[in-house]
Amino acid sequence: MALHILLHISIFLLMCTAKAIDSEAEALLRWRSTLIGAKSVSSWSMANSTCSWSGVTCDAAGHVTRLKLPYAGLSGTLDAFYSEAFRNLISINLGNNNLVGNIPANISLLHTLTFLNLRSNNLVGAIPYQLSHLTSIVGLNLGNNHLTIPEYAKFTPMPNLKFLFLYHNDLNGTFPQYILNCTYSLPEIVPRLRYLDLSANGFSGSIPRSLSRLQKLEVLYLEGNNLTGGIPEELGKITVLE
Ligand SMILES: *[C@@H]1O[C@H](CO)[C@@H](O)[C@H](O)[C@H]1NC(C)=O
Ligand SMILES: *[C@@H]1O[C@H](CO)[C@@H](O)[C@H](O)[C@H]1NC(C)=O
Ligand SMILES: *[C@@H]1O[C@H](CO)[C@@H](O)[C@H](O)[C@H]1NC(C)=O
Ligand SMILES: *[C@@H]1O[C@H](CO)[C@@H](O)[C@H](O)[C@H]1NC(C)=O
Ligand SMILES: *[C@@H]1O[C@H](CO)[C@@H](O)[C@H](O)[C@H]1NC(C)=O
Image (cartoon, rainbow, N blue to C red; front, side):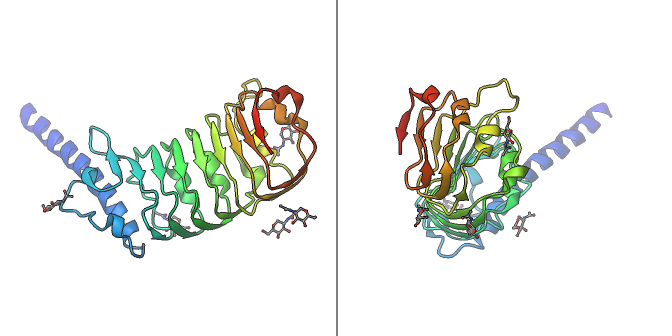
């Protein structure tokens, strides 16, 4: 009897696992169906394990952990991308494609993400402040799109952020103070930010002295803006390209 129940439970658990894996596949296929001319992912098929699909990497349990499809000729939006099925996704690289439209706020529900690279697409609209809810994020590259300034006041701390690339967008206004305030969780913790690229935007006004808070900064790109004033001396050891 006990064995019987146990067997039932195991079968149930197995079915659950299988279902979760299936729906990751379904989610990817659903997104692909919204893309145009997605030749690089045309071999994605339910006939094969998701883990063997081009650009897809899985963990030992068969869950999708990485999606790596740069220069893949993908045209379309990210609207149908998000799915609850992605519970183990740690890295997305969809750089150098032709993704258009907004960055959907629901990408921020992918709490396991540590790297998000959407550089060199044709994304428009404000950077969703919800991206700051990705508290595990280490690297965020939104460079070379047509993005505009987010609602800074709604940003929450991104304590693990080390690499932030926002170059070549339509960001304007004064220096984004939130970068200094939101890359650490408590005032006494030094922000982890090491690499900051804000070049080729429309930022204006003076470079804040509080930039010196970014004590771990190694590389800073600010050229191609209308920013005035110098880099705080406290940041003397960094490579500044202005
Ligand atoms: C996918 O599965 C089909 C049918 O089982 C097989 O013919 C094909 O070689 C597989 N493709 C890949 C990329 O594994
Ligand atoms: C994610 O957001 C996009 C854009 O707002 C929306 O079209 C889509 O339905 C959302 N997906 C889910 C699963 O809620
Ligand atoms: C920033 O750019 C937007 C358009 O993207 C414009 O409406 C706004 O006036 C600009 N703000 C400043 C301070 O230049
Ligand atoms: C950043 O923090 C400083 C003090 O720590 C505060 O005066 C300032 O208003 C904050 N700015 C933003 C944009 O959160
Ligand atoms: C800098 O300001 C000048 C004059 O206000 C303007 O013509 C120019 O387009 C601005 N450059 C950038 C990169 O925003």
